[in-house]
Amino acid sequence: MTVLREEYFRRLVDAAHVELFLSGNDGARMYWPWRMQPPKESAPSYRNACEVYAIDSDPLDDDVTTSDVLDEAVRLDAEIASLQDVYHDMDATADSLLEGLEVADSHAFDGSLMLPLQEPYIDCWKEIGEPTNHIIGLGGLKDGSAAARIQAADEFSSTAGTDIHLHGFGWGPRGDLAAWIRNHPDVLDSLDYSTPLQTAINQELTPGDERMSVQASYAAFRLIRDLREVSSCPDPVEESTLQIGLGES
Image (cartoon, rainbow, N blue to C red):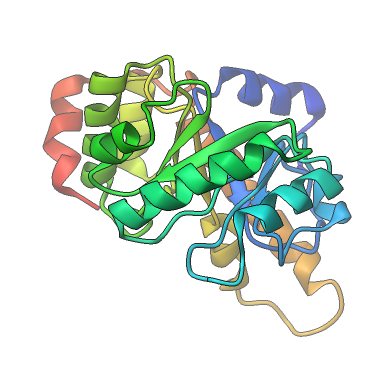
């Protein structure tokens, strides 16, 4: 569900420099091209409400394993499955990813694997063999500033190159980051965030039936607005102006 006619919505999708994955639950009331959910929240209704479905690992839930993610990805015919990482621990994450790659080698899932790294990202990437044929995710910056995210993406791509699909875990496209993406469209390829749904939940609505449908409409508005901000539609931003704002979060 979007309030836009299909032709105008597709215009924004085609002009976007990154894929914006929506994480969180809206009761599958809204269509959005990209969705990401952990196994305990994923469902056929969400699979059918998007074009690209990613099953995420849950680093804060030790009960969720790479096998759980891959099994759910096969069950729901997801395009992407994320291997398990260990939040804020580079060495443990590298070990977990290496084990996950071995599991994936003999698993029925044949889609794209997402490898969530932890800082220092280049060291973590080198520790797992410098893969270039998987989606590389930068983790641990969900609460980081736009400046920290920009620096992480820039430093990683400067070393590993821009041919790797680079994903920002929990990176909402706030002002400075969105402007940077427009000025550097070849670095980041995708982001995921739940902000549109969280913002919609905070809307003051009279209690009653179909409250979630109205909240989904608010979330759709935020998503469309954010998608435009990471596309070629806004006017170019002067590099000097962008640099002034990098200290903001």
